[in-house]
Length: 314
Length: 314
Image (cartoon, rainbow over all chains, first blue to last red; front, side, top):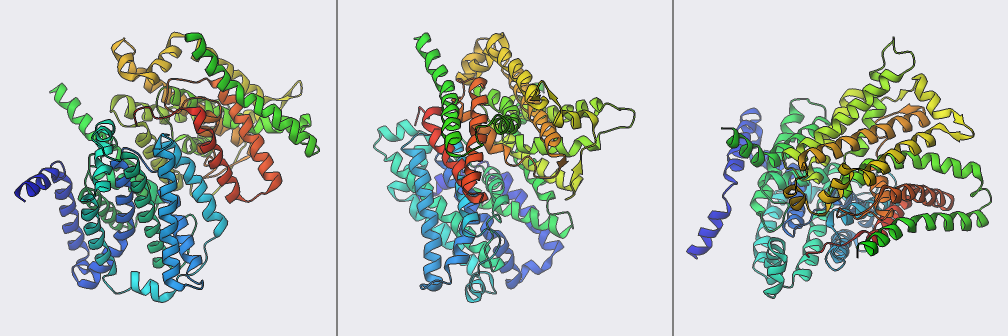
């Protein structure tokens, strides 16, 4: 048990700066908008953050396998569209939710099979599937429409701490998944594919499951966004592709696979969410967040190299 | 061995040419007017834009990278051109040179980030694209700009011995690129860099400088494509370049260049561009829905992946 905590503690290394910056921003936010300190205010804050947290974790899962997912934004759109068109069917809310989540997992698994069995680079496969997924969303709903039953919107995005509960479930679920052979194989296969394979890890299966899980989480984010707005929108997900990468990178998840933590990805997405909120309240145009995201990514990823260059000069 | 390698590369590049001829013959027999010289000339004009973006994309991909900022750079060129026009410049050459300098500068920024700061190409170019997207909306707003540059107007409409000038411009730049890539020392280092960056650095390739140059060229050719698009369209607006990100990568992959770097030729990309336009024309004849077009393009790239190489170590 003491070994467990020692390892957990060591995995926080390198995240210290992020946690400090995040704490600073949260305190600043609480000073600027004291409303967040009430239970209702905190609940709404988590609701704003929740879709971003989901896509950040989805991207982190793929990056842990050593890949990258460029189809997250398209999948959020497809998830929102499927949710908004299937809830009115014979099976109601439960059927619509199952359809959305099942679609996400199935599409994710299909992408996983192409990447894992076909051994094609994830970047080009997910770029191609992003267009297929985006096209499918446009076929289902050419323009924003459909409907989410008000009671579901109220349950997910109303005055209940549902998002907080789901976040806790997500963290617990990830801990459990990491205790299974497939969950361990995901990280091991990303860290050292050949070594893991030779030690008997089912790296291919683990990777396919990782893509399915990622698709499920992303479709879930689409469902949540649809519940927030009350309808489906095929292109609502576009900003999420880069935001997910930015959050994961901020959270210390490596592009090379095998390095990174869920807590890092969550902290990264929380920081992004706080930044976007602050910019919104400062009355900056919404597109300014694109500029900030781009700069954040470049600076975060370039930081180690910049440090090395500075050390060489000094 | 070397001969066989060269043969397979030639075959890969020749395949799309064969496909084009086949498609034109079959479509010409089924659809009256499809294979008429006028329609073919029109399709090649459309292919010129993809072909020009494809120059930079091919070079970057052969060098082991990818450029996801080409679409944004095209839009920048189309939006910035009227802004940098100045009165004493009656021919319009000055504005064109300035626009190309801006586009090349964007590429150079990518090159510095990737070559000198060690950022992964995917991240750097994606971040550049996002930043530009935000800046463009802030600078240009939602309004469209009209062309009144005399040289561009001439470029978009004039013909020399029956051949549109834009096709001639493409042919000239393409010839230049092919001669440079396959006939010079620096061209050979691009292949070396894409095959094994470490080995090429150890054998004296100026890795950083070549990388910087590749991305600068990519920005430059995307700028050329943006100007050509503006000349053909008569109008520029935010989002005008968006379709060309996937098209340029698709043309590269269709042309038999390995997405993993180190192998390929621009001659294949030329055919890839024409093939892509032909397919799009056929899809439009059958069904004009944007969703289907997106799905078929995505499937096309997935379908061509077996030609484009696998991840060896996984």
